[in-house]
Image 1: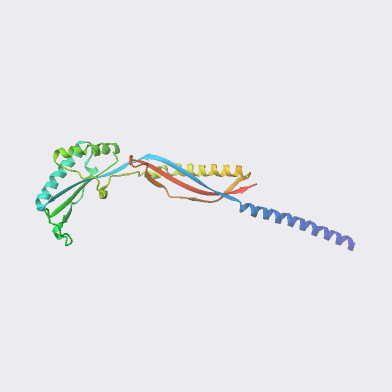
Image 2: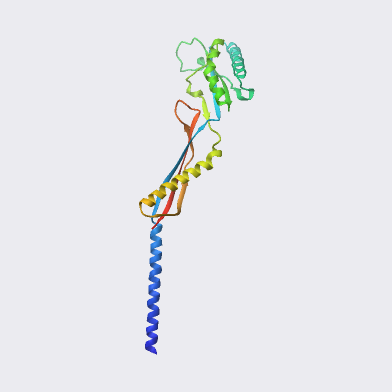
Amino acid sequence: MKAKSIIISSALIAVAIVILGLALKSGIDRFSDRDRAVTVRGLCEKEVRANKVTWPIVTKEMGNDLASIYDKIQRNNATIIQFLKSNGLSDNEIAVNPPKVYDQMADRYNSQNIQYRYQVTNVLVVTSSQIDLVRQLINKQTDLMQKGIAVVAGDYTYEIQYEYTELNTIKPEMIAEATANAREAADKFASDSHSKLGKIKTASQGQFSINDRDQYTPDIKTVRIVTYITYYLQD
């Protein structure tokens, strides 16, 4: 009986060792599989039309009498506003900024002979969602020259700006497309490496960027988003 008991005990121990070994192997395999992963990038780009334009209309006057310059600016503003409104813009799309006055005689570093003491910069700002109309008026602003008004161009302080303000409406669609593109790339990698794609290990989303499509069409924007996703790989 004693010998039989020893045999049974040994057999149970052997079975337990085998089971433990299989469990350890399975655990090691699973742990090893968790280290096998692939990180892919998903990209989505979309072209959109700007829905807001800001157009600074800049004029400059010089002289020695501020009162005369002020009267000239007031007449110019009235003419410019009439031009804008007669071509389809409304009062709430037009704003008149305070003029900026530069007194050359107050500049102690200016040692040149001064012909005109004051230089005054005057800015009217058009802010509108009527992109096509404003672009037409920008091309038509030379009509103001016939009325004695010189609109200053090429001043980088007062550039025309086109904006796209409806990003939230296209965000979900673009994120979904970027994620789908990442999944497709991961599937291809898994297939090429004779593996299967597992669950997502980590995922991160970059920031949305909005840039001009090119320098010739600033009213056309390219919206871009990149996602980074790491998948587990399985045999």
